[in-house]
Length: 65
Image (tube, rainbow, N blue to C red; front, side, top):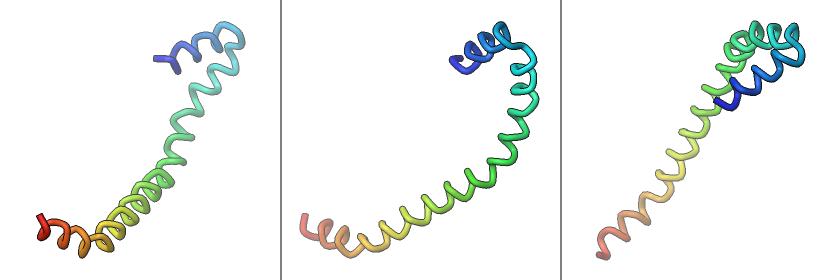
């Protein structure tokens, strides 16, 4: 909602720039999508490695209770 209001203000102040932003936004989103996917994958990989390393400690902790 805030982004839309910001775009409306930009449209009032400088409509050519607002139209260029409206056209370029989907293109920039598509270009940045692979980097988001890579970031998600790397984050998931590090979380998996952390859980794998902590597995023996979690097993010992669970057996102690």
